[in-house]
Amino acid sequence: MNFISDIDKKDISDISKIQSELLRETVAYLCKNSPFYREKIKAPPDIKSIEDIKKLPITAKEELQKDNWAFLCVEKDRLAEIVATTGITGSHVFIGLTKKDLDRLAENEKRCFSYADVTPQDLFLLSVTMDNLFIAGMAYYSGLQRLGAAVVRIGPHSPKKQIELIQTLHPTGIVAVPSFLTAVYKQAEKDGVRLEKSSLKKAVLIGESIRNPDFSSNTLGKMVEKFNTIECFSTYGITEAQLAFCECRHHKGLHSHPDLVYAEILDDAGNAVKDGEIGELVVTTLQMEGMPLLRYRTGDITFKITDRCDCGRASARLGPVIGRKAQKLKVKGTTVYPKAIENALLEVEGVENYVIEAYTGDDQADHIIVKIGAHNGNAALENAICENIRAKVRFTPNIQIMLPQEIEKIQYAGGRRKPMTFVDRRQKNSV
Ligand SMILES: [Zn+2]
Image 1 (cartoon, rainbow, N blue to C red):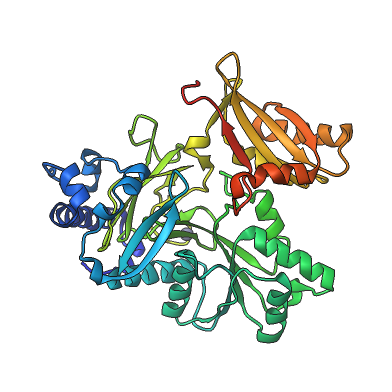
Image 2 (cartoon, rainbow, N blue to C red; image 1 turned 30 degrees about the vertical axis):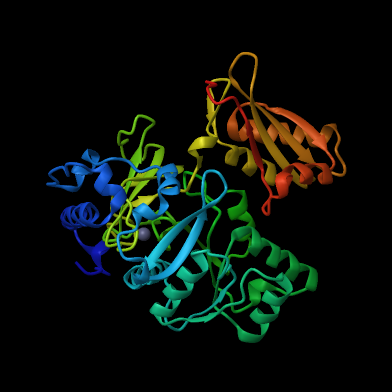
């Protein structure tokens, strides 16, 4: 089967039929070509409809890391590109793409941009990394190219340089990580440049969520949406599945591409939850050649919406990522993800940096200490933090105010390149 660009305009039942066919195709392909899945699926089940996906085994990230190249379905010399993501233990998990996979990637991203109403007349600053084995920059680049838009590959460098290019080249859009875009805004403010009056009209944002589960903007979202002349579109990507999901102009969830992926939301026992209910996102790649994945656990907690969107598309949509499954905490009977606490902290004036630490108490339950970096730590700041966290997650954690440089030491412990904001010190078998 070929890519079906207008698949999301079809009836939901027709989409389901196409997905059933593609799943049958994928399973047959894997049983023939994948050393890993040949071993895992000894007797392929009868797949009559896409619902039969539940008869197939789940794939864990640990398996992909351990048997990395056993997932490869083609001879190595047929690969066109190798990218990587970070595995459970911090080492690389490699993903090999064939020419056809690069084509699928470009098609996927082209559709993402079209959901954001990007046209061939647009000029985009690509302010994300193109190298270092990252897939995202390359993916967005090829999507814009396929759409016919023009690209300026600046990368995530120097907010000053970004502003200079906005003033000289007059781009209409930018692809960036939200926190980097806020750094560009801050620099513009410092330099007296009014970005709201510039040519920039759209921001396609990757890597961090800007929405709450009800699709209102979270703290980061409010920071990037400070100008109503720049419309922000949230996206969510999975390197291993060579996929991204993107919001349309209604901003009510991230659209999937039904001929390229089938998304499930599963509970802790591995059963599908009802639409709208929260669980772990599990994806099956469709029409992939190099390293297709069957029911791959992403570790991300979200929900699925399957009714037709106001934009007219019938593709399933995902909610924003609420947190990482492995970081789920149970504090005083309440389920909470560190991300929700981070959102609360971002709103408090005077908090310069932070680390959230979880540990197992003598009662064998999860406990949290929120370590705050602030130059002017006092009781008023502590109160503001407590109140904001209580309002968002309904409990009051222990707060410890320290100097920002002390927090930095924890964030970059062990020579990390990126700051760590959550430290999990829980005993493995805690409840
Ligand atoms: Zn839509």
